[in-house]
Image 1 (cartoon, rainbow, N blue to C red):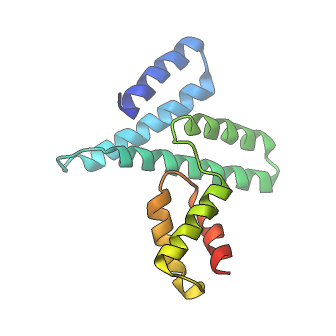
Image 2: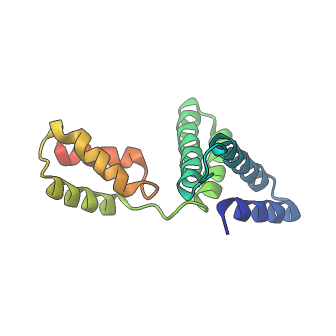
Image 3: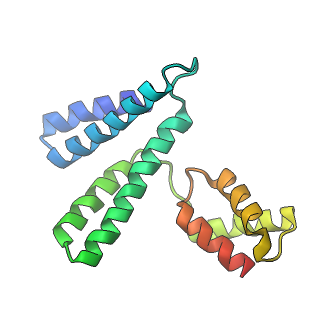
Length: 150
């Protein structure tokens, strides 16, 4: 079952249970997936699992940034709404890696690529992001790489 099918089923379920926030969030995800589908229409492979993952990651990142901004502005009610939406989006994402797991993987990549200082940041960061795409937040990966290269 594709992500789109899963979300359609969950939309029906949210409608029956009268869960307004969940329904609104799932409809937003569905709309983003449809946009991606229209964007990819000329290509023969259509929307791939990576495309679906990218839609979810982008939506989650937008929620995190909004939470941060609302907290700074003292808008607790809006921040709480964004947190609830983020939790719903994260149900469809793969389990995110912990900081310790990311650090271990970055250490292994640093040894493998033989990088030691700040000038190799781009090399290590690109390798780490290829390895961790969808498994860890980019901001955390960047912090770990900066700490490693110090």
